[in-house]
Image (cartoon, rainbow, N blue to C red; front, side):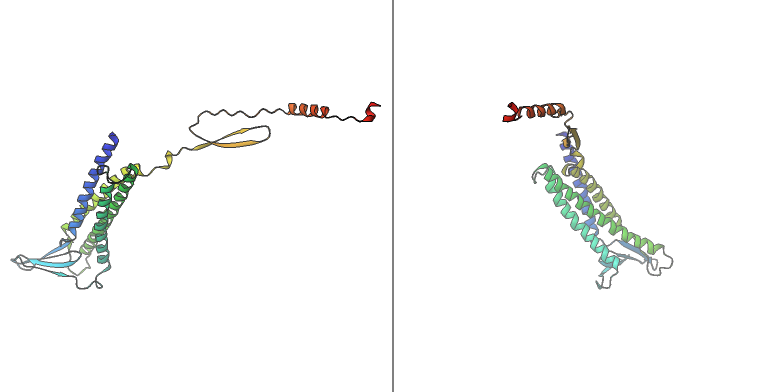
Length: 256
């Protein structure tokens, strides 16, 4: 009972951690500050350029800002399409992970038996891991491109820096991966039986005068007494001789 209570509170903590991470990942999608760049033209006017997965924006110190969506889907680079797909997958899988975890947790009692609940929770934990992995790949790929272009001396276009949304996404992905890992460990340990729990069988053999047979007995039987059938070759030969004597036939010439 104490172990079940500890596991239940551990599941609640992991679920809260994954839920917070999923919310952080979702909050980065509408945020414009994935990359930013500050360009000072004159003393009183400074232009700020920032962008995300969907659009480019510009603002200045006068408070005027303007955003423009990317003009064409087919004209975008490959890494931008990949980052969009991974970010959407992180949000979708995180949602389904939350649903599965709510169904299978011990405190909700929505599912059936304890083993079924543990397996549903394990599936939700794996879904959380997929969500965190997709988010981590997205933000790391984006940050790697920004840093590589910024440090490249031959890159002549406008250089950007890493925005605040990337750091928020990293934090959410870490929460998803850590919470999903702990949740998968406890739920998998209970819901998926290991092969070590099966009792091995050991061979036990005994031999008689003519044959040798081998039987597989469970390892739990620590003491087995096997008695071979009584058989003596001499007794058989004597019995055979007695039988032949008693079956002797007589004819008329033997008495003459």
